[in-house]
Structures are given as C-alpha cells and as structure tokens.
Length: 237
Image (cartoon, rainbow, N blue to C red; front, side):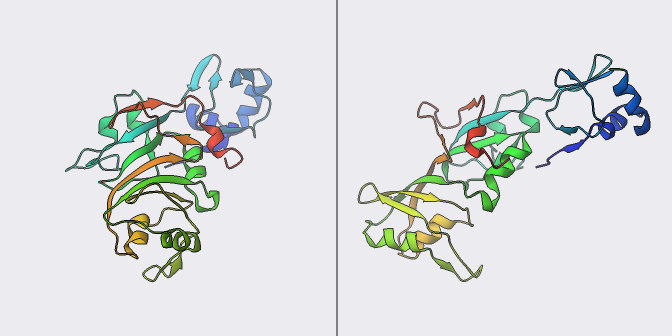
C-alpha cells in the first residue's frame, strides 16, 4: 500500500522534465489545471487521485476504486499466490491489478473483504488508533455460556505477544453461534480467544467493517463496487 502525495511543482517537474523554477511561470500563464480549475500555487498538494492537466493534456487522471467482496472458503487474502486462488483472481474489474486488500481474512474464513487502490482510505481503516469495529459471526463446536461475554469484555492476555486484547463484545445468538465485535485484528484472535474455553471455531464469517455491512445478496465469490465509502472512516483520512 503506497500513499502518494507531493507538491504541484514537484509533480509537474517529474512528469515533464521541466525545471521546478519554471513551473511558477507556467502557473502565471494559466497553463496548469488541477481538478478542473486553474492552479494558483506551486505548493498545492497533489494526491494520487488529483486530476492534473498541462496545456489541456492530462498528466494524471487516476480514479479511486472501492470494492466489497464476499470471500469464500479456500481463497487466499493475497494479491498473488502460486498455489491457491486469491481474492484478486475472483475479480473481473479493469482496476484489479492496482488494488490491494483492506484487512485480511484467514484461508477458511468467509465474508466481507474490502479492496481498493486508495491508500489513504485503507490506512484509515486498518491503523490501530482508528479503532474501526469489525463484526463476525462465529460457529462453535461446543455450547456457549454467559461466562464468555465477561471474558471477552475484559480482554485476554496473550503471553506470546505479551499483550492484552482490547475489550470485545460477544453476543450469544444460539447454543453454538455468537456474534463478536473487535476493534483490532491480532493473529487468529477470535480462534485463540475461544481456545481459552477449549471451544474450537467451526466457522468464522465477517459481517461488517465499521458502517459497511456485507450485502446479503452477494454470493460467495461475488463483489460489487462501492460508490462513496468514506463515511466509514470520516475524520480519519
């Protein structure tokens, strides 16, 4: 994931070979437009999706892409893998080669996956300080009891990492099914937390990330484009 940002004069110089000192003259002559308006400052920030033209010729017109995918069992959360099908392999989208994954899922975990070429958005969703909640439906081998709720809310100490998990919300849906909400994503965290009760996870399915819920009409392996997903991380980008 690469987050691209630079000044206008540096951008013009790198794309045209023009000396940065001469970019000021270009601006004065009204030769440069940024997002449809004449540029007026050489220090104007240029992001990876800023539309830039010089004398009417497009220098950058990259558009952001946001996809919601229902990940099936047996698919790798990776952009490339020599042995297994990846989430990228499931896509038939013109921007697929520029996309990266926003929050991985284990090989046998199913449900909501987000993919994008917008590094600012994915960073806002995944950085620990954002505390974006992620909701999972968990199917267990053994019956659940009320003891699980308090243990998840208190947090659990993982001696291997030397840390205590953040408080998590657990809601019992039936004898063997629970809904768990996390604000972090430690290695195999949900399986390890239920492992404290010697209760193996039979199935794990991600339902939502922040305010984005997996569409119920998306079959495993299907995806759809998100038009404007920024409210999920508003104020974090």
